[in-house]
Length: 256
Image (tube, rainbow, N blue to C red; front, side):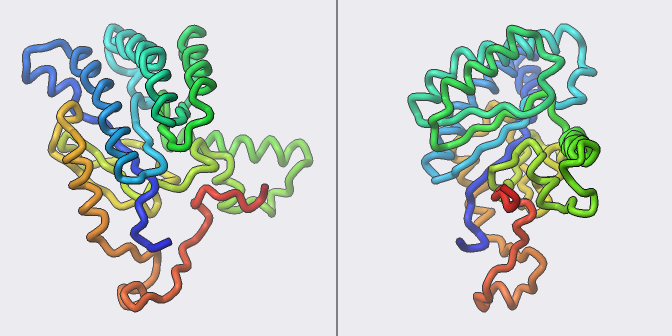
């Protein structure tokens, strides 16, 4: 595998509210159009040979938004799961939802479980991060390891990056190679802090509802023009010296 293999794209889908405001529409209308955009981008990823697409749908901090908007977003999420799971199944896409599900209603939790079960045979993976935060992800991974230590199942001295990675939300998947944020903001907003340690970052001015296959292709082309070093020098990379990228975050379980 070359250093510029593009297997996993992660996207912070930003700009739904602004897109709607520009058109005199309600904010939730923008979110609905944004949800429908996912289908096109998933298809575009499959056309590009991408194995995994991870989308930041709802952050841990988004609960601070007005209650009416939060309720509408939860309803939209449930609608999306029921509406799209059959389509994802047809296209060979496996859905995986990551985040803290405990604050979701029982009906939404069931919709998540049903959608994941329906699509479990898919070869391409769509990950939706909902009620997710990068710091939460790392903290809950540490808690799980602490529980194993307390139970006498693990010696604390044996805890390393590999073991911690296996307890994170994206365990079993390759790390994101490319992190895209739409909407013009230039920050990662507590998204995949552990997993994106070596991701290439791409910031698009395009608001998410307008982000189409051509925009995705432009981001992928930009990625392929970059030199990924993973701690090596540029000369080492350009002369083809064997890649020694750490497998700590590769998603391949070393302690299975």
